[in-house]
Amino acid sequence: MQLHRDADTLKAKGGELYIIGNGGPSFIAGFREQTGYKGPIYTDPSLAVYRAAELKRGVVRTLDPRSLGSGIKAFMNGQRQGRTQGDPWQQGGVLVVAPSGDIKWHYASDRPDDRPSAQQIAAAM
Image (tube, rainbow, N blue to C red; front, side):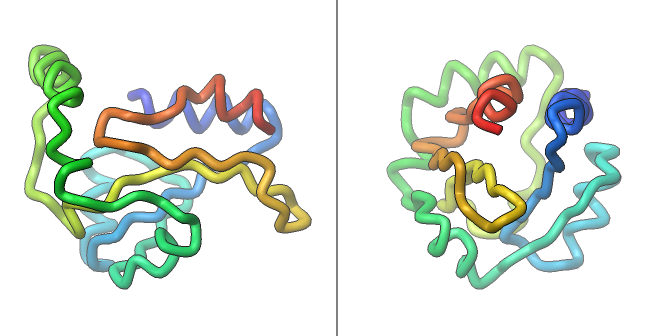
C-alpha cells in the first residue's frame, strides 16, 4: 500500500510519518484497519492543529473540478470513497519538523488530490 511505501521512504531518510486526522478518536481504529498503517496516528476534531499549520479549508477547495480526474482514476484503480469521517471541507498538508521544533518545510494542499510525493518530502528533510 502507498502509505507504507511513503512511511518507509521517509524512515530511510531518518524521518517519521505522523498522521493527524480531524475525525473523532473512534475513527482511528477504522483508518488502521482500512490502511494497515501501524505508525503514529492522532486526531484533532477541533481543527486547532490545522489552523496552527495554516492549512486550507473550504467547500470550493473540496469540490474543485480539477480533482475530478484524480477521483475517476482512483475509482478505476479500485479505490472507493468511504464514509466521511471528520470535516469534509478541511484540506491536509505536510510539515517537515526538525527535532528542534523548527519547521523545515510546509505544504498546504489546495484540494483533495493535491499532495506532495514521499520523494518531495524526503528531499525537504
